[in-house]
Image (cartoon, rainbow over all chains, first blue to last red; front, side):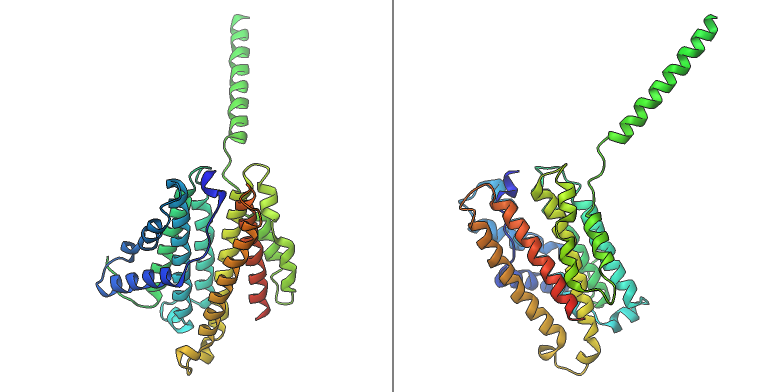
Length: 145
Length: 166
């Protein structure tokens, strides 16, 4: 329970900017955006050297998770009803899938045992990355296989 | 007679084994509950004519139920994940609502851009507010639980504010 004792929330504009830059570069170079995982966490860990290892990893993973959440939100703001229609989905189907994805995230990630909080946040990050990739498919941005 | 006793023994053993297995399956590590109670409450209060402020009644419902089995912070974090998802879906709905108007508007002046700007400002407020709430525990063990509770409460209020826009 150590890691839960002082959770960090939110992400700074510079964290988000670094992640956005990394994903844009990955897309440009036709690479999977998953390569950007840990971009935020690794620079955060360098700034929290005084904290113990578990707490540092947990806090920084949460900062990273918030940055991916923001990225997913920005991508979803760019998906227009026209994008959805072009993909042969109705707007309601699109929203239903978004809702289902969030429900799956809760079901999968919160199966982690107590004490494995870093793994839980890591699972949330992976789900956010999947969500960004899914949103990208609507925006017709080419991605690496 | 021996045969009959054996049959009784076998039957009794079978019944006992079945009972043990059945009871074990009832009590063997059930999957962690999803925030079903809060979810049902939200669904019941999400009709077109429903007052969004009623969603406040759904706050902490699942957490209260779950914390009999698991630590508060874990339960509240799971409920927070549910409300975060709800907020993301409401934001997408809201931005799509303005998509038609936005077609002829430069991106920086678009409705979706104003929603994003508002969301960014709200996140800054949320983090500062919940950091203050956490600090008000002055290093005590309540820091973590109070911060998660604050994140949950401000997120519920944000969902209500977004729903008032529709």
